[in-house]
Length: 375
Image (tube, rainbow, N blue to C red; front, side):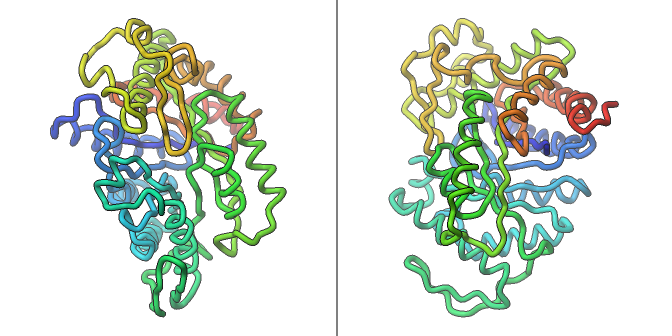
């Protein structure tokens, strides 16, 4: 099993000064993640989503992390592939450059970036995002494997050109797809790319998604593969705060997860801004009681209820507590068939000292437990 961290660069109070501090905090966490034994860091791409994600240029963030590290893999989790966000040739060029400069440590995930807030900013047609993602993935894979890229598709027409530089990894860096429903899992399997799964509702839901992915892999014919190589890798999200004080870890984790969920509800649905944006320091229990039972967040393609009694999103049903609590939760993820645990630590209200302590605890106890070298 592999272990990674994912960065949204969330912040409850987005002043320019706080934003700068959080971005540097994320770099500090990523560098510590390598020291602690994590295998990979993922960075999202979102645009104009105040509170929820200030990581608008992950290629710059990951390049900076690459220069500060030597081993840990660098994951775009994910690049928004509709053409208004990123032309596929530019994605191939930038990603290959990072792969070269990092010594072959890049992983590339694909997504649609389909919130109205983002598509309206960048002139993206929401009705074309699926088709543009499909064509982009195929162009990128071909660009990395051919001496010259020539493409004549339904959406883009590109005469022969060399795409430079070429990546270090052969035939190219591993490809992934953001997956939040069975149909996108099936698509990832048919494409022959890894699945990056959210799984907010816990190991049982993740196990269902794993079974759907495996079934689609078994049924694929190869006709829709985007590359000559296949990456059947299943990674799932794991919200976590680990401290010596279990109650404090659960309190910090629940508060951070509430902020995360309410931010999703705001940008992917029609909910108001998260509590911490309007009521700093709001009591967690009171805020949960006030949350609307039928409030629904739309994250990518998934409908995620965020009421306190309708989902584990607001509960402590994740890796919150001591290292032993996290180990027990990861064991459930392992039973669910997860290949990679993506730790979500950097949530909008979680202080930097709690993030760093969590990373250390995972490095000291949790990761070694699953590798047989507990310190």
